[in-house]
Image (cartoon, rainbow, N blue to C red; front, top):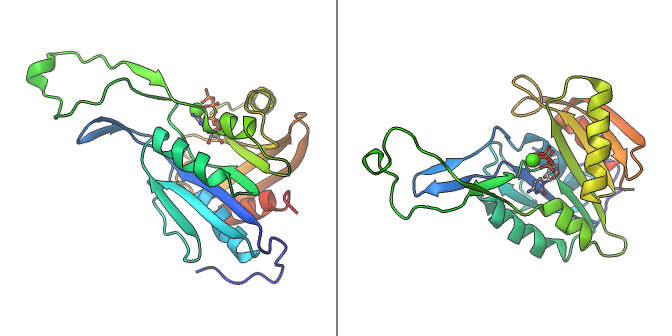
Length: 224
Ligand code: CTP
Ligand code: CA
């Protein structure tokens, strides 16, 4: 469980975190999903709680237990997460988007199960873009509100990875972007994480490698 931290440097601060991976429904029994476990977001919630914050977690299919004391809002799809985050953002001082939000969703959701008999040998899905939650929250940012994004990248070259991060923070308009390399064996679902945190100018302000808890604390250090 969460142990009380000696340093209550986030005492009373209202921190909103999104975590997990969204599922985009195809029919009542099927969805398009991703490999996010929600571990990094839950570690952030636990670390923020230990440092005295009031924490709200918008959770999409998080695979790990959420510490008690965290206010949890359960969502499934990107559209549901969009609605929940937009609402919760009104009273948040710090927003951290760790969730893996589906970029696209099926244009139509079938009311009944998709049947092979009706489809035939090939099935073509039409997908439409989901709203960019982080960019929307950054657009609507209130004075004093701090917004942090996470970029999941599979790029293996360190310089190209940073270049992608710099492009991304410009597009998103958030205050900080934690750039995170993901693949079969790192990032998603694993116990450890490596992130490089960029500010709005693309300057590296922090780097962390280790447990998701230590990465969480390194990101929370930016808030104080
Ligand atoms: N994000 C979001 N809404 C979306 C897609 C992403 O809020 N529809 C957020 C994620 O939670 C993350 C950040 O944007 O904090 C970066 O997500 P990422 O998938 O790395 O970036 P994209 O802008 O979706 O670009 P791409 O997947 O094409 O690299
Ligand atoms: Ca994406």
